[in-house]
Length: 84
Image (cartoon, rainbow, N blue to C red; front, side, top):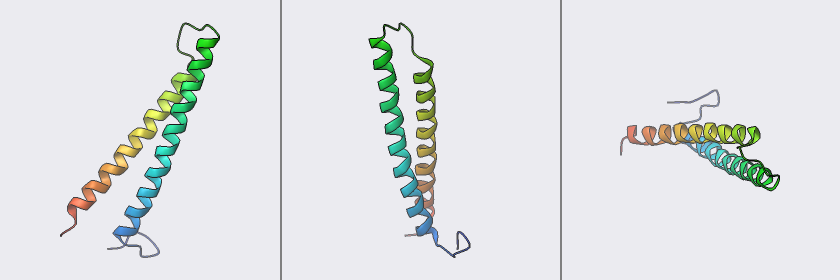
């Protein structure tokens, strides 16, 4: 079975997915760090509510985490479908 124009097999697609997941994990971590920085700055400024920027960053991080979950679940399901 091929996955694309180059005739890449299932293993190539899985390796590509793993690379994307690794990048998404880095993005998720960066978004979390940015959200924390926004919260710290708001606290220093005396804010009493969560800043909109922090909410946006947290929402983006959750979306990235969801993508990671979807991709890793797909890889696990693909692996389970492969004969031993």
